[in-house]
Image (cartoon, rainbow, N blue to C red; front, top):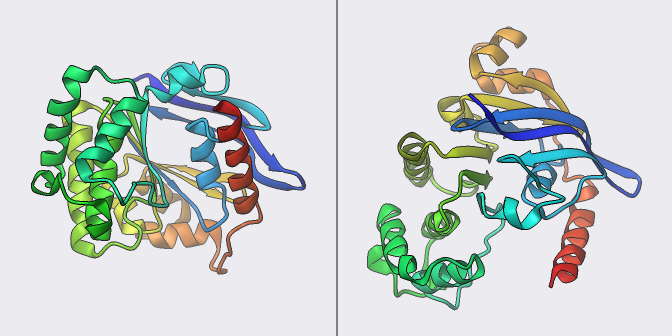
Length: 266
């Protein structure tokens, strides 16, 4: 099976802070890949580099064969993303949020309506298509964000803490949607989560990053065998320690750099 994501010797520095330190890994096409780590470990920074929001200080990132630094526009067409922080427009309806996304991605006008209907029905929001998003619950907003991320038929879906703050029933519902997409369409899923039981249940392989370094990579069973533990949470704690982490200094620096890049691209 060919690799759809390739990260080769990638480092990201924010002045004196090294957020990601010379990491390398690959993700196979059609794989559900978990990317785990404590707060400030480098997870979100890596996703932001893979999705063209940040440029690496060193190294190379390939997405579906495209260099994400040199071929940004082409690379962007191949992925969808659900950010950790909400990014919907609350003053627009669910349907209008999808229409806005379709315009940004220059989708064929003839396909926008049927594709929007298909996806809103998939995430069980068709009956609320004309409701303002600001009236939605957290779970409904997450479902709409997934629909939006799928609108342009991406080959890779990035999910940065997609179930953060949701109740167990809604988390289960979201993962049912996501795994069904993976099975039916062969879509590659790259996700981060702090709910380790989720990762153990759905991920084909898992990479664990800590202090900007990849400390382990393998299936859940391989990670448990490596650490001599009987579940992923115990294996994770063996590999990353039990100290409580704060967000790293790179978080605010990352936001500043993203703002500069967006302004530059306008």
